[in-house]
Length: 154
Image (tube, rainbow, N blue to C red; front, top):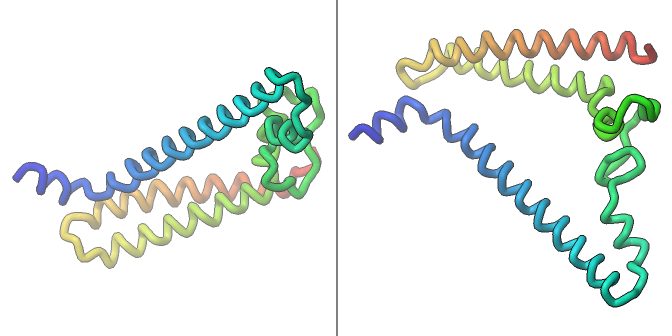
């Protein structure tokens, strides 16, 4: 009986738990893929052969640290920004800031609608609390997007 009440009250925990499980699964598959890639390179080295250039290109990230799924639409920061910043420079542009602002704004609007139109008794206050928090997060992302677009070259 307790499990039924717990699931009824905390059904929304399925989403973060699911994201965590699928994120862990993705990281585990990425680890296996990179391990297999390095094992293949080790086999070439053990045989005394030079690995193909495509294999070596796949083992290294791109010159800007991206794993190869596309270049960002703006130039990277200078090399002296540091290794971590150089690897993640594609997150700094205004595109990603505007995207975050729109996504969090849409999710906040969804929770505002759910707080008014929810058919599940007792969820109005919880949805409204989440909607208020996400509204502030969306406003912060919107300000970040405005600032990143306005002061982009500085």
